[in-house]
Image (cartoon, rainbow, N blue to C red):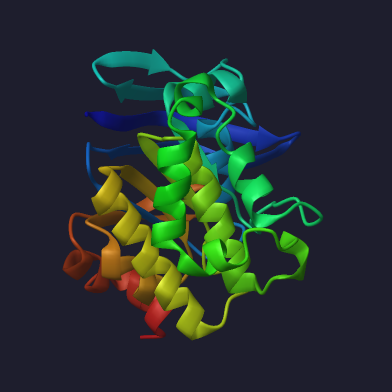
Length: 243
């Protein structure tokens, strides 16, 4: 099932502060594209624009899903999620007093996902056995790594075609970062997803990315058509490798 994103000349601002300046990028069907950049360079702002949480002041954001092309600008977050676009937000944004299973089920509120709740819930528990063991545990009592599993599982319950993942490494120990990145790759392959992942951990991101873009002060300053091209970039060497 085809699912792709095209972003053209997007500007966005918070009041008088411009956060994105002419951002253009694309994510083709079945790709994992890394959106790289240090804190404050516009990665989360772009994710918010795609999901309708912030309206750009200029540009287009086009989603093509199963042959249907839709301009996302001006649509509500609910409408965008109903198209099959799900976000794993920075900081996870779970409901701490609800159980693991209750948080997962909240991800399945869109109509197209409701009929598949039993199958998707079983898939989540197969992908994350720890969550099955702790399905009745309040999420707020779990570790950061376990909470990230819940956040990923909640997105899976939405039955998405396009998965947006915002800073999955934030707040996690290095070994858990590696496992989380690997799990994103596993979910992408098993579910046939198209993935746009915003991440500041360059070394982990390029382990699973097909290619990537580097945002600096709200602008795309480099596009790498492969992990090797990203690693050879002078910009990446300056910001990430200290060279």
